[in-house]
Length: 195
Figure 1 (cartoon, rainbow, N blue to C red):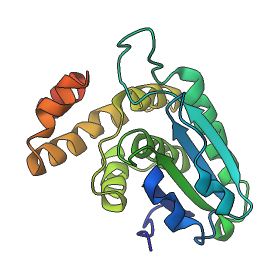
Figure 2 (figure 1 turned 60 degrees about the vertical axis):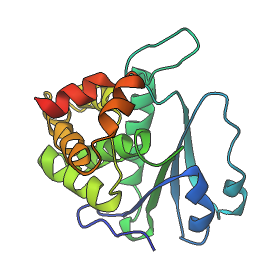
Figure 3 (figure 1 turned 30 degrees about the vertical axis):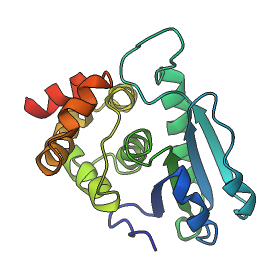
């Protein structure tokens, strides 16, 4: 059973594609599905009960790398936040939000941080990321998604600045990530950790 959020007024789950089948019986009411543009819809969704789903398609990058890659865009984050607003219109005891991407590490954790920031606007960004890290210990939130969401939520850079704490925590635990992230075009996240 996934950890229960100590902050959100509804249940939340973060996972990767390979873990989806393990959540079919979890009374999931809402799903944010973040996939690479060419990836097929996961078959596991056929085993879920009735649910509302937002499907977003973009690559896990933070800067435009080549013409074939689609970076997260303003409209992706606007759709995510619009979907998040609808969660609060339903009885909270009935809401169980599952957010997934390919590994449940980057796009999904950034998206969940934005949903929490929107749901709990007075909560400090550092506390939001502590909660994301508690629920998904391997979290490494996609910086571009956070930058776009920080602007749309009018957080004045607070979410982006607080994300550096997660990057530092992960680098302390797994130093090998420095080269992995740099070679993957995500050096700005490493620089954020060092600032």
